[in-house]
Length: 365
Image 1 (cartoon, one colour):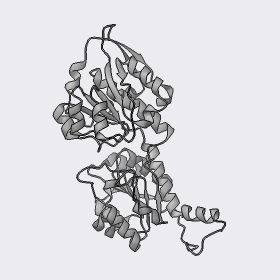
Image 2 (cartoon, one colour):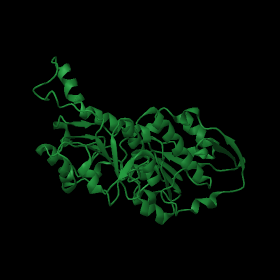
Image 3 (cartoon, helix red, strand yellow):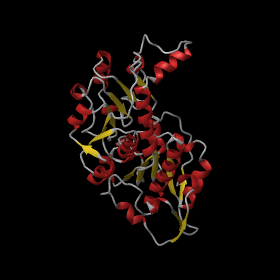
Image 4 (cartoon, one colour):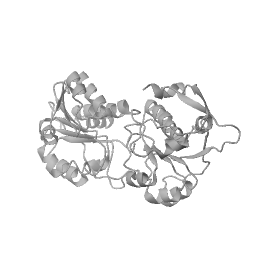
């Protein structure tokens, strides 16, 4: 992690042409113009000055990207059409850790590096997942509404023995990557038994922290809480379908802070309607925003608008890492975390230059 703590100033001389960077992420643009311009300027780059209308459709995005060599995206769809409209594009960095909104195959074909801000929001996402679990275990939403309505404990809606502890319960983590591991450590601190399913097993971490790997089906069968922390791809789309839900305990809760399409919406709605599972905590949805969200009618479902990584600390880390990703590539160096490492054409951009190591903003480390 040492390279995350410093960046470099590139001295290209007075005749250097700055690389053009398009910052799409609304959360990065608003209130950070001076910082963005300063950071990019120190690394021989400049931010494309553009008026952006949100939400950004493909037509607008193609116009904005026409001169871009680097793009920092929020959740905007970086499609083959967008890449075609940006003939100078060399790198795309997600503003977080998910990259299902970037067409990786097309990027590979065009030699465009794709990077993510790995490690920026592990704690933020896992803490939200646990907040949902606590809320569901203690029926926080229902009792909160009861007090706001002028009542006290809603005995007509919740049996007096319905509230449960997390201590001693079993959590099944689907995807024991960075966020999954952070979730596992929180679970151990709560005295929970931790099961995990993943395509790759980190036995060193599992053995050190008393985590048991099982098959996906076995994790579903034995867990009181199933928390999803896997990426969205062809293998995980609709991973939680009717068959998967049928394997879960009727007293179990499903938590999704990963990506909405990992859960088949119709299957979960059906399970909630029939009482097949106890409830759910959802930060992500099949459509975002969701115009006709079917979950709003269920009192045993906690809903948040994709805020898992939305904390000040995660924002600072993501902003810094996204800028490092793009400016590194445009100066011929590897990004912080590249998801298509087979693309190496950017290394030809490296040229003779003076380098002076300078620290990042204090809020980013």
